[in-house]
Length: 140
Image (cartoon, rainbow, N blue to C red; front, side, top):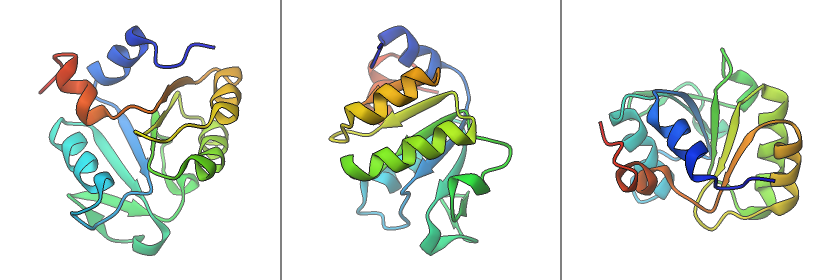
């Protein structure tokens, strides 16, 4: 299983993507809010997933209740959930038809990562695109 493969991360972040941010928050104090704003500013087509705020927008990104509501499907599912809840989000991403799952800093779930890898998804775990994009020299 290839987790956090440098080449795959560069490929994921080097092109404009349709990205679903699961657990996105409208609260500016939350990390998901800042990462979502950063991804939008980088030119990605971002959809926020948060059932409590469906029908609104966060930094111009539409908010939907569930990953199943993201149409067409997102290529990359960025998960802001705790490590245990990431398992459900990864399973939903597999069913959704995503090409990759990205578990944020501190989010580690090896069982979910193995299932995603077995389903053919690129898996990134315990990383943040807001850190990786500048590190890789991919800033817009």
